[in-house]
Length: 241
Image (cartoon, rainbow, N blue to C red; front, side, top):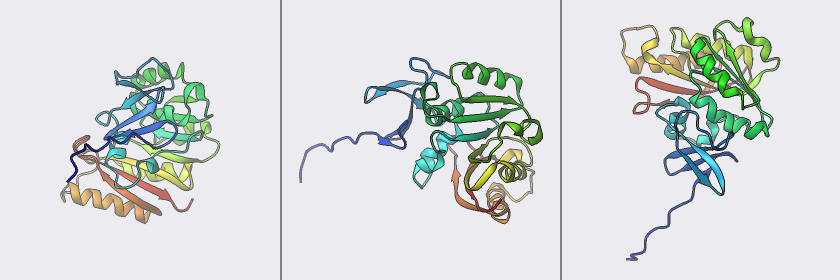
């Protein structure tokens, strides 16, 4: 038997700005020399990247847990996307790296809606040197208050809103803003849903059935335990308007 060491494989390109290096995700830093939440910086092929911490990002966790190609969870670069429940901006910052790039060289647009003024202040600060990032103080359920910012339907929509009725909220948002064959991602927190007494597994199965009956194709239901306990991320395709 040969005794040589196996060569370490280089990072895998998920896009021109997102790398998977072993079990770590990295995005090319759109604001070189700066971090958003104290994440690690590292250079790949001479370009600075930020480590995408899956413990602070449900999208990042899902990309490491998916049984499919992680790139399938990402929107197309240079497009307009909608993020409901943007929070403090961890995932948003990495999405910006991917969708827009430095000084928005890719021509993308990232509309981020959140109800918390503190979160909006942090997103607004982030947007000062990230053209194309649009923070919105608003209720994810009240489309008429901010929907004018999206005159055309988008091909990618993410929802992370820990409120009762998350699934109905997601379905309504997709019907209003997501194009046919567009990709929708629902991050669902079990504890925020109405308790049925049947247990968490039954709740998650019921959510998947609800999405199917609402006219979506469920591409994958991704378990996030270990990164975000009691959470699951549903990746769906919009089949009809």
